[in-house]
Length: 96
Image (tube, rainbow, N blue to C red; front, side, top):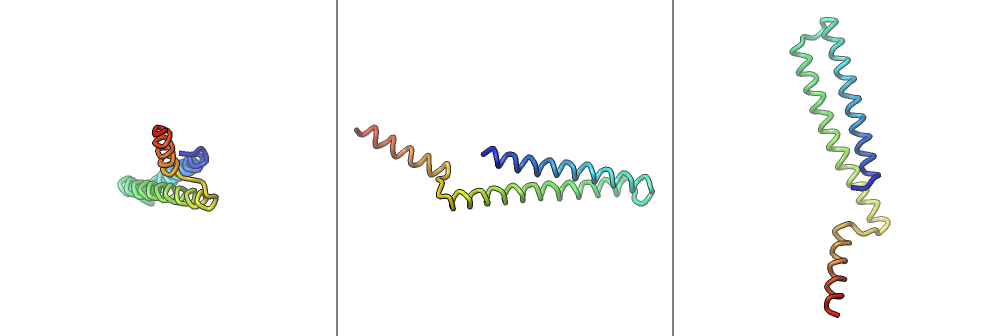
């Protein structure tokens, strides 16, 4: 995985962690005020965390797709294409 991709993903994960912490604070405050029960708070947090995990996966897919598009526009070979070419070169080198 490229450094840029890692940085983008880690930024997304960091944002997800902040979202989780903020959600926990909000839910805790609602419980203190008596606006929701402890059981309701657990469900609310579970829902938020599930949503965050889904978004994290969506971001990862999006970033990979965008990087792939960028590489194609720049006509940069993928790892698979590079490995395939390397095998062909090695095979031809062995024949000589």
